[in-house]
Image 1 (cartoon, rainbow, N blue to C red):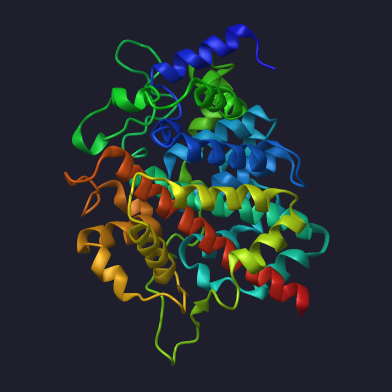
Image 2: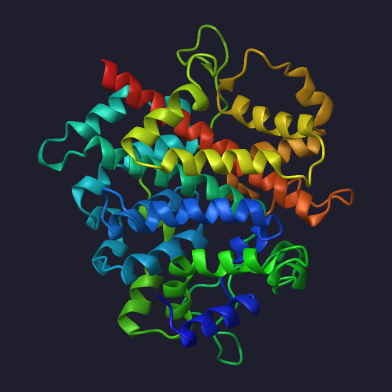
Length: 402
């Protein structure tokens, strides 16, 4: 339970726009934000088979695949605060073998999820003394997919564009302002409309925002503003994303759709979230299925994009470029509803988000309001999250019935 002084400091940091620009962006959709924060808090802090340092280190590994400084530094700070070994932040090769064994499935899910196979699952579950349990692996996969997709949102909203390392100071010696929005336009301050909740957000929702996420932001905020030791600060600064990446040339490639190609289209009619993925993940990792399902439903019911057909087109297009198809959907609607620039943007943010630091087609055109742009980025994030989970859970299912 937080004491009054800690609450005041958190409120001050939030009001100044100094922490958690991701949640500040999402705050324009408070209903979705509640669902997102519940899920994130659950997988990183609540009951589960993985120890807390493992969870944040897995998040670091996931964010590093997309060179996302924001998330790598955030989870490095959390990793230390929950008792993680600072030496592990020197690089992946220093981490325990059990964590290093996740590197391959992390790489595949991040860039070419259709390559996820039963063999990846078998390797992890049959690794001798270093083997993973099925429950541990499911939680690890959920964390990987969550952080990969969150990278898309971070880059889509330019949150990572001008991230300042923890050791940096502003000219007047005060802690730096983190994750400025709209950095590509030279604006290094969080817009007032995003620094404080919208007038439409009720006090109850603001309270949920502050207190549900408190355990996630408080340690990071305190490390920034009230550093414990120089050694801790130094170890965080060593957490360069490249230290946690192997095979850096492995990246997104166009999904092969020709009949002679080895990889077949993933047909939702054969394995869907509603009929297969939800029940499996909920059975192996208690309650996470309900939390994830709530996120998917929440983003689909947001009203900022008034056309359900447009939301469906964005979702199905993302799944399409990741090799997932719906037999009952007319893909001609994608070209009818999505302008070319929007399609290019959606694909870039979903498939190679770190290349969107200076996007060719930024999502800034006049007809879209801020809440609409954020909604599109939320759709990208959630569609990608579900796609990665479908591939991973299908592979786990294949292993279980083999």
